[in-house]
Image (cartoon, rainbow, N blue to C red):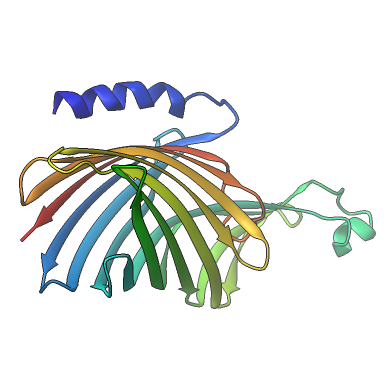
Length: 257
């Protein structure tokens, strides 16, 4: 555990490096069951914070299954229930009627959606190709199609122009994303520590965001493992989620039975 604590002390200053970016923490628990040589099933829970760790950002629970087709190819599919802490402020654009009529200026706040918890359903299928190269270095490419659906619901918002609260019916909405992740890890036989680094691209007709991650997995025994990582997420064109650029430090525990 001293090694894991030392890693967190190294990663922590990186998370606070940029004042204009957000910083959060990510905690996860995973239980994995090996059915046979080809099949594995997993159940995972996650809790995440934002606003410099002051605000709960997300609870999530997911179920997935992996199939090892060959030594270098793995297929997987999964479902995740997301429970997001949603908060957003919108602003007037030059095409808004109020701006055209002179009742508001471009860039003035338009609506404020106070904190509310919103459920979303996420489905994914993936193919992962991996191979050892240059000795004990393992390279992998994962291509994942992800579909997220937000059911229709009524939320409360504040109108700056009318100076009052009002109800807004938010229509149901689905979103498709292709996630491409390239990863390298040092996978030496007999070594309990596995450092890794990866970069992941999110595409939905345009490049939405890029994630850069560096971490370390530590195998404590045949059944128990822990891990820690540092991640920087650079948002390019993702106004639907209204996310800022984010520094994230994560800690996870995995149990195999």
